Length: 304
Image 1 (tube, rainbow, N blue to C red):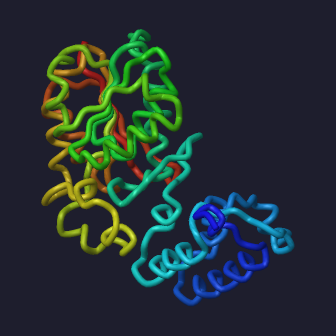
Image 2 (cartoon, rainbow, N blue to C red):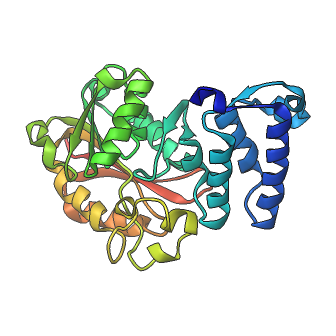
């Protein structure tokens, strides 16, 4: 029997596992929807088959891992708060399905707004050629933002930078899987450091930097604090260390009229706006809210 055959189960077996997993989710106060989302990814079941439980009568269902492995990982979801995205190894983001691991932050739905804001910023600028230039994703992690930029600006060259080699490996894999690898250049390093050759030439910079104050990180949900990379979370004493750096250094890289756009934590908008104003190189500074109405994004243009 091959390893692949070991991952084939009957519909009845999977139905029984789903029932057990659902009951354990309720007992551990874990959202029950996670069970079905996991089965969609691991077993390729669709929502209708799950809702009607029609898969119960299927003779064979192929899983991407064995039922024992699935059960062990589910037990870790319950006991160790292992995020379900890390169990499945994928997460949806915009129109993509991204590979994720504990080496990268799980891309959040609100971060999708960064791409829409970038597209709107180009449309509202006096320099429409921005969409054809160099765009930079600093702290790329899974590569989500870089991939979103490559999709939104097909004539642009995208540069994805991360300090973590493990994260860059995931980002490259996602770019290959989505057919966008040739459009993105990957660099290992701290923020702008690998991009010296682009000084004064960058059309736009987008970043979802670490912005959580150091003393707040240990108080986050256990799914986050125990499993997601702290390098992508900890923003220093006030949470603004990385943002300050991006504000200070970006003007030497962005071209006149270039776009500066970041995600930040709730409650940081006024501080970020003040820092941008004090730096002296930015104009048309804007604060935008996410879908929940939280001031989540800061956008500015380099003075022309």
